Length: 362
Image (cartoon, rainbow, N blue to C red; front, side, top):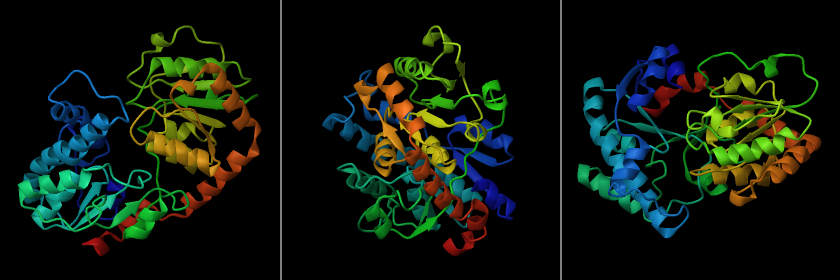
């Protein structure tokens, strides 16, 4: 969207965490470092405690509310306000998880548009709205009544409507926006471009939730199939932590995922919204092994829609991965469902089309 807006003649400033600046600057985008990483938000909200509550517990939900409803919005709003004062934009496009940017835009009197990154949960975590309203009060910002998932702003939805939460669809001013995978370039692994004699499976747990034990189990199950396997281990799992690899498995720290998906037959992954949407857009069946965050909701969505299957927690064993992957490769129905969703995604307005309409939101 940022590149499309710039190509349409708009002046664009991309405000985000400092760790993303090299990638954005490499694309020729003007950047401004604001906010703190999510990990720093968790540290602040937990009083720098070295331990974390059990995911899903009441203590965990309370911590998540403090992080995303208070710590991160406060930091981001404070950092972004002087940026908006100097840049004086006509519109702020803020990510659905970045409520601090929405607060700053309201404080500055600038129209805002909420940009989704995946499926919306049916409901907020208990106490989230109250926490965000408390931060708004600190800045003297008046928020609209009701649901604050979009902070009252129009919503650019990159999730296909057929899989989106129906209650959310009915409640917001929604504009569909085609999800376009981004990858920074690079060479495809040889298994993807050479002659093919059997299916190719892509395995990844993304960049933030790498788990050597989960990857080892998945590799063990997939390697016993008559397939070739490409593994993207990400920055959090070293290749040598995976032990000896079967001949039909290759491990890489990073692969150009957007290009790779054109060559594979099955995606086995963590359920991050980017990989989930990219696989749907490519019409591929998915085996989802969720590890955290929104991944459990994405796994349930894919499984319920018939576009794939999910394995949760202790269910992720080599045998279970083998059986689930074999079934997905043999059954045409998951691919048919995925291809129908791919057609729906292809028909959504492109970033270039939406960029041409940004003035409608100001």
